[in-house]
Length: 252
Image (cartoon, rainbow, N blue to C red; front, side, top):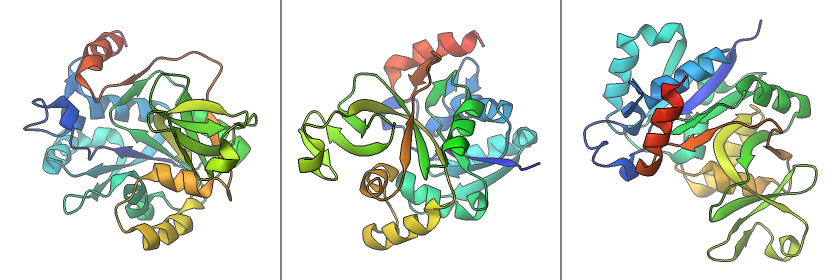
């Protein structure tokens, strides 16, 4: 049986959660009696992902110590150490290649996203459609949106505050495209790694995955996933949603 792999982003500075993050990484801020990282690890493990890579930066040793104290939760856990340089989402995925490469897709999960999404169904959807990447998207109010056609294929990105469109403004404006907000979860094919290597040569070691997706969607299939079944979703990286997360996770 193939071991399913996941990458958890846990290296964020947590500036929106200060002063809670003045002495700990954002991933170690507690909600309902557990660090947010533990909630995500347990959710990911319950969905069948047993080989997990976690990136660290801000107070990174705190995460290493926490995992050791808990016996890595019985999982095969790797640490992708970014204490020397925080690489952003795209750079992080590429740095973790040694643990994620292979024949099977891998899940990517922000540590500050808590949801009741069916992660198995999300992964299976990606496998069924064999896209380069599948990104969780929702209809919610924000300033920046991914743009999808009627087949859920990514076509571009827009910033509503600035009126900016990428990658081809003249081709995107006026088209019948759906504006959907990113949900902080992806399933990615290892076919992405050579493309990320090429992108890094252009952009440098530190880069976000979002402009990479927008740049490559002209050439490769990147799909949006917005399941029909309702689910709860919270960005707990900001103070105003911590209380909501406490209520959601306290009822698990």
